[in-house]
Length: 58
Image: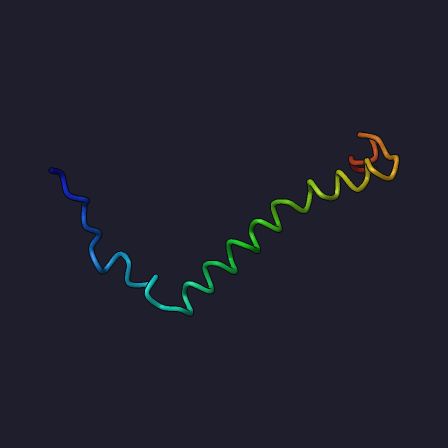
């Protein structure tokens, strides 16, 4: 029977802090929102009747 590999406590130490977990979660949510903003903008422009040319620089 194989046993699961143990992760050293030093590697998981930051995750034991509630403040650090909140920071990581907030950073993940922020990065997700920042990555979705251009896509949402493109859908908004096209939804208002603009074409692909409306998305480019003037």
